[in-house]
Image (cartoon, rainbow, N blue to C red):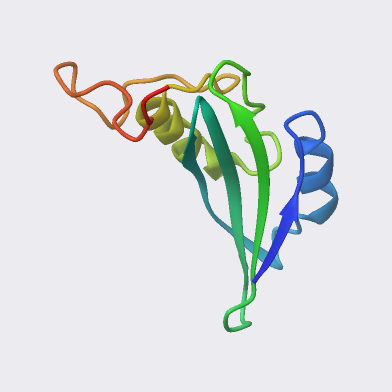
Length: 114
């Protein structure tokens, strides 16, 4: 596994330079609450036909900073982006809320106390 740091500002450029649709499978976008209003966002890829070849791009951020969408590069990313909107209360460019949680669900259940 390789973990590569990026920033929200350079995310599209970095993933765009890396991603080859016939070589890499986009698995997920994930968030890890770091406490004190901080989050680590991860974009996870595995290489087709290669056992245990995983690359994770990650960026450190806060909950107020909008997250760029990678849907223009990887259309299937819309599901993961909508998930982090619901689960963490993040703003992801173009991603709507309401996919994973019912109206009476706990809001942003994976977001830690700030």
